[in-house]
Image (cartoon, rainbow, N blue to C red; front, side, top):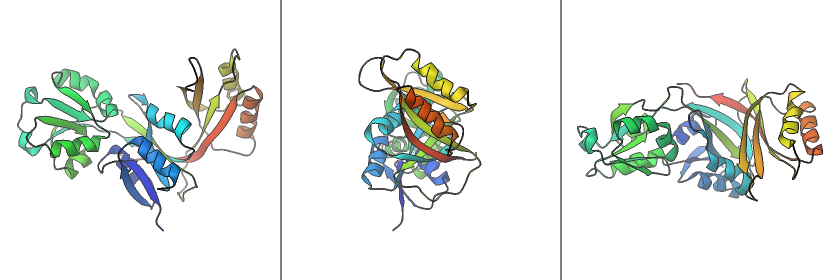
Length: 283
């Protein structure tokens, strides 16, 4: 039976681009929301899910992180880094519509945030409406030819839904990339990559002054480089946090296990989330 990979759909989304750039031979299936993707993988409805985790402009995708922490029990098996290019697209009937007459802009919240300065400058009068995905926004605009609406998305979605471009490269910063994580229960068959990471979740012990400093010291004296530390609420009260930590090295038999053991000896909890290859999609 062919394996399946869930992505944030419908077709044409950046998540589908990430799924297609992944060196994976299974079938890709679109789901309406990020939680839908993750829960489908957790239930075994699909083998894997790919979700955005971090953007170079807007930072973390908190919904993905929180679902991985609190709602599902899945392992990270791969990372894809995807360049993000946003455009402003309209129905062909509105290709000559003045910007001043565009009434609504539809897109995913992350895309809106990544194009915030452009929208303030060029379309500050237009109402912004959030959608589950950029491709869903493009589909809505195509299905509403009589409405003076526009969608923010990518060129692939615009072509798929027969929209025309009014502006390209409207992201606020040129270097715009998003990290996506492939997660699931069983290890997939993927080719090796020269770059690998390990991710853990650390929960500090209660009433432990200087706990985070001591946790970081466990990595520091071993000369282990951390590429990212993200704090997320445990949802058990103010001031209580999990720390989502990316380590710039693969899991091994001695160094990382001894680091985790030392962290646990401090009274903290360590949850292993995965050790995985990193793939970078080309422009």
